[in-house]
Image (cartoon, rainbow, N blue to C red; front, side, top):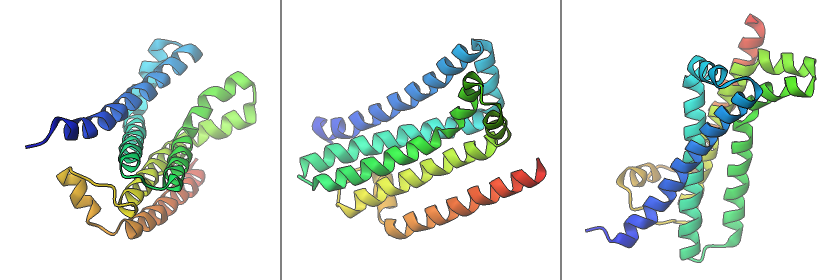
Length: 190
């Protein structure tokens, strides 16, 4: 039987991750509503929802994993350097995943050349955002395994039975190849 404390330990990071997902998705709608209109924001979301949902879900998952790891590491007196490392990686990948928002902000800054570039390459930047999330998640799972953070969830336990160092390296390599290839492909066809 699972204790209430055990459920709370898992539920709190889960709720933080879901809240992060909702907040980022809300920021998307707020930003586009302020720049255009709510109808334009809905239209934009409907046009590229298959990019926006994985990006925001990946962000929420990273924040949830970071919250879980931070809480578990504090309880187990893990070194502070571990939290700094995971926080830096997670922050970096989350910042990368949001680069597609630049295309929406540049017209306000009246930088037309850059605006054309980001508008032209919006899809590759969205793909880069998805893969940067995947990289961030693989780094978080690597650190969970490296610092022996106790995992009580069966699915995550099965995932953690893999060699996360190799998984992380493979994810980074494949992400770089796919994103670079897509940028090259996209520049050739457009």
